Amino acid sequence: MKVAVSASGTGIDVSVDPRFGRCPYFVIVDTETMSFETVANTSMNAPSGAGIGAAQLVAERGVEAVLTGAVGPNAAAVLSQAGIRVATGARGTVRQAVEAFNSGELGSTPFWYGGGGAFGGRGGGRGMGRRMGGGRGMGMYPYRPPPPIQPTPAPATKDQEIETLTQQLQELEKQLREVKRRLEEMKR
Image (tube, rainbow, N blue to C red; front, top):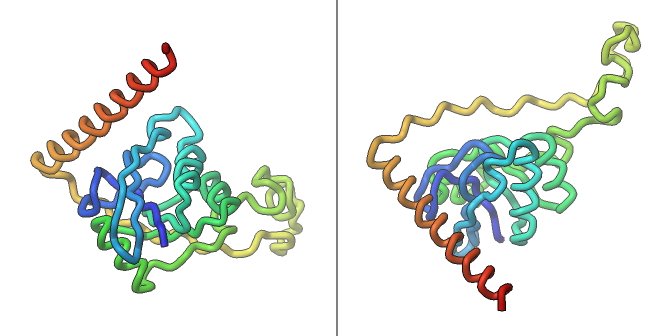
């Protein structure tokens, strides 16, 4: 099975980034062979819609599941529509997250998790204010347990930060080479 793990750097032994839409990289891992490829999250710095863009990016890679710390409702909706399972609460290294997923320690989040509900999350449904619920809880959405509280990751050491920045620089240089190559092809 192919899974995408939100990561703080490139490689399988880097830390899981708890943010889905704003993580710098996704490590795409084959859970059977542990072979992997790293993909830069091009939506990371988007002013809005980072989660949606990230979800589309991993969907295009053909993954069957996403392992991350947390995922927002818009990204969850895109992943759900693509038929991609979401496992939240991933932590440690990418390798540890995949091993936890393989052993069943990371459960799948239901597709409806984080969605807007029957009335689109706009407050027009019963029980959503304006005395429309009659104080009896009528028309309330099904109970959705809150996501687990994630421990704050330990601050990176200077060496770890240097390594992460070096990896990011290498990835950006690779992307720049690819853009230049593509530009030259288009000029011909």
